[in-house]
Image (cartoon, rainbow, N blue to C red; front, side, top):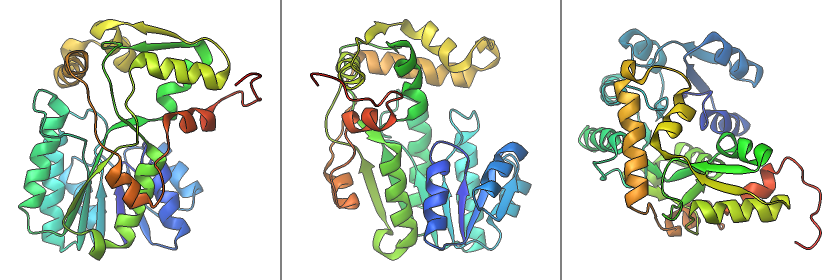
Length: 293
């Protein structure tokens, strides 16, 4: 039995069907009954509903499982506590393989979320569990770019001239599925998951425009507007952790590039990783051929 946390999130929606397609027993853990209904409709028979930061939910979810795929809900104020608790529970339950979805360059401690994941990595490595750590860079995610496709405007909360490495979530979940299926081969490994290329916001706008056949405006909106885009009209004074995570991102990405290397992901996939242009072409809402491109 394989347990997948946050199973209706960005990774889980892609990973769970890949595991089921291979005939594997999957238990999904989700926060809401609505998410549970989505997963049951997708063929998941074993679903645990609840807050995965709560001990009773952890105990119900992990009972009897052989492998755990732990991905924390985004920007969760109890992420560190949650990660450590899941590792403790896995050790107590005798879980055979704990796979942790971390982040590229978790050693960068001026990124709040990275420092938290670094602490969880250290705890996992020291736990005595068989483990694999996946370190994806910034996602090529449909929900991140759908509005760009619709409006023709790419807005960034940091410098338009800093470079970033990207990775397709589909590639990440292909690796995650392989790791969970073949635990012995991947036990003890830490893998950076990065596609080839490094892009500024201007580069991404140019590529999107070329694929869609229209001009994409690129705007730097600053940290306040970026946070509003993340959290809407919520009062950030009541969300100190979330605000701290968001501001650390805008500060770091405005002052430093965030780049990695594609060699490891290429080896794991057995093929070239999905490029940003391929990603845009795949999710292009108007895929008619563009004259002259």
